[in-house]
Amino acid sequence: MSVLLIATLDTKGREHQFVADCISQNGFQAYLIDVGTGGEPQVMPYMSREAVAKLGGIRMETFQKDRQTAITAMSEAAPKVLLRLIEQNKIHG
Image (cartoon, rainbow, N blue to C red; front, side, top):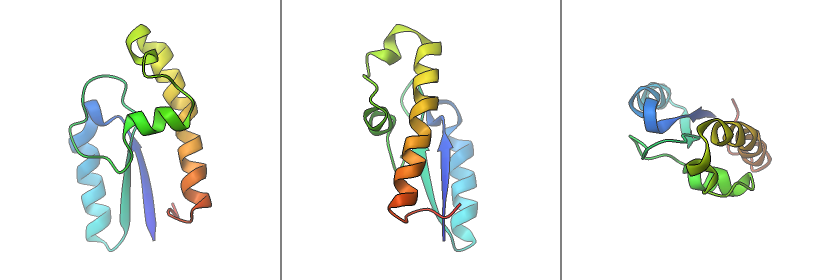
């Protein structure tokens, strides 16, 4: 069984890595998906924010224009990532 963690890894990467490690220690696969809109991720994601943005049809220039616009765009892209991984039977929770 696998679990998806959608997280802002630029600000809360270490915390989400801790949760992912706990999930893994209990025999499950944890996938970290980065939806951060600020700096570089603190930990290595399964899917980068660039990949999430691309899947959501978001141009990376959006991140430089306006923080709220970037957050909204990533919030809309995240469910698309979720659906794709469910369709690929990669996640279960």
